[in-house]
Image (cartoon, rainbow, N blue to C red; front, side, top):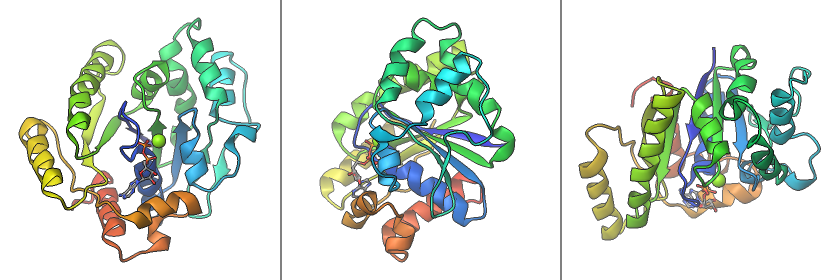
Length: 259
Ligand code: ADP
Ligand code: MG
C-alpha cells in the first residue's frame, strides 16, 4: 500500500517541485514504484520533468478530479504519464484552477483527491503530491489525502513567518478530517553558504527543531536549477554533486533507511 506524501508550503520558490521530482526519482532509483502528482495549476512539475506544453495536454489531474467527484469511472492509468527515469507522473495545467472553482459547490469537496488516490494505493509504493503555493481548497485536498507532509523552506526570514500559518492549517486538517496526518520534517532547500543562511537555519532549529525534524539542507546549486530546464534529474546531470547526494540522503531518510 502506497504511502502518500505531500510537499507543501504556501510560499512559492522554496523548492517544492524540485523536491517532489528528486524524491520521486530517488525512490525509483531505489527500486520503488512512485507516482508524482502535479497539483499546481501552473504545471511546473509537469514542465520540469520535460513534458512539453502542459496547457495543451488533454488529460490531466483536472479531469481525474472532475471524474472522481462526478463518479465517472476511468481506465486504469488514465492521464498518467511515464518519465524516462522510472516514475509515473499525473500532469497538471491551468485547467486545475477551473476545478478549484467548481469544487466549491461539491459535496465532500475536500475529499476528491483522497477518493481518487484510494484506488491507486495498491499500485504504488509512494505517491508524492506537489502542492501549489496557497492554502486553498486544492491544498486542503492534498492534506486530506496525505499520510504525511514534507515542508521545504528557504533559509530566509519571511519563509519562517509563513511556517506558523502552515502549521496551524495542518492542525486544523488533523482535527477536522485527517487525524493521522504526520509531518516528516522541514527541509531547508536552496541553502547557500552565507552567514545569513546559517543564522536563519539556527533560528529555525531553535524555533521548530524540537517538536519537528529538520532534515539536512539541500545546497543551493545552479545545476539543480538547470535540471528544471532539461527534464532530467540531478542524479543524471551530476551524480557526484553535493546536491545529488543531499537529495539521495533525504530519499533514504524518508523511505526509513536512516541517514
Ligand atoms: P516551488 O515549487 O516551491 O515554487 P521550485 O522547485 O519550482 O519551487 O524552485 C524554485 C526555483 O529554484 C526553480 O527555478 C528551481 O529550479 C530552483 N531551485 C530549486 N532547488 C534549487 C537548488 N538546490 N539550487 C538552486 N536552484 C534551485
Ligand atoms: Mg512548484
